Image 1 (cartoon, rainbow, N blue to C red):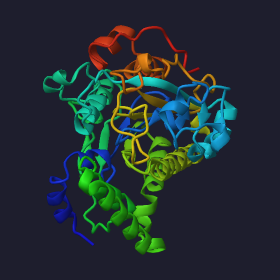
Image 2 (cartoon, rainbow, N blue to C red):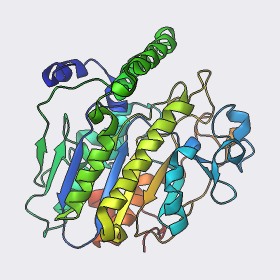
Image 3 (cartoon, rainbow, N blue to C red):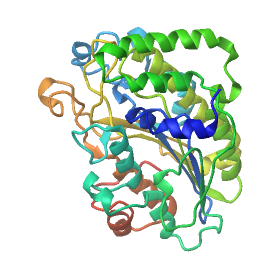
Length: 391
């Protein structure tokens, strides 16, 4: 057991791993006019979109992956004859059947080549065109959205966790709150510590095995807060969204899967599925006016590595859920996994800026004009054609 003060002092030493899998999940809420609701979930650590929405119809997939993303013959659920859903998200199949689940399989922010969790997440939350712009654009894109909504509620936003989420930082009013409580390190903490060594070949394997042993020793004795934090966040967000709040954002960690990806991503996907279903149940009739967008800082390598995992990449996937969707489908085109189709010869090629999907969602939900979205909310963005994502 460690005190919050000790944790805060120690967190500075964890480097990129703290970005990949934070121990305390921040949550931010905002009020806005109208009945439409928006939930943005940051998937910290770089989710492998190829594994979540498996392009088993691409004949090059089997060449790149020996144990991952092997399609319906190995437990994934066919969606449309080309893509299959990772079984970890199988609880969301009723949403797919109802037309309330969609995805874009080849998207990214404009961030390229450096593949740093911190920089990638900063760019994702700031909504800027390049990481160079981060020095000049200190507020987040949801805060800039609030600045364009003069009728927003007085209790504009606040965040729960160790630090504020950049996505809602800025001139629009915001509050923050962090619990003064002792923290018991559970499985997420063990995973975080393993990430400290993920770039060190000497410690990666041994560290991972040690963390697995620690988790087994804890067994069912892990605290409820550590196990069910994502459910508490979803319940809290749904409660506020049923009142005056119209915009919520929080993060889920555990997506940095350099080794033993099959087990790690299954657990992360289970938490994501449970989070979305708790939101749906909690929102009740308000689900029909809600859009959930789950976004991540970048994707992962197309080829599986020697540790049965994947490394930091470029193109990733966007998940969208909610009663406002027009239909369940794969949105956008597929770039292919042939050697000549990969970005930098190693990553999924992104075909569309993930900000474009967010911008079209804001246009549909809150009526912001295209010019405001391209110049003010997402500087430098060209929205392109309307994906007709929302009804």
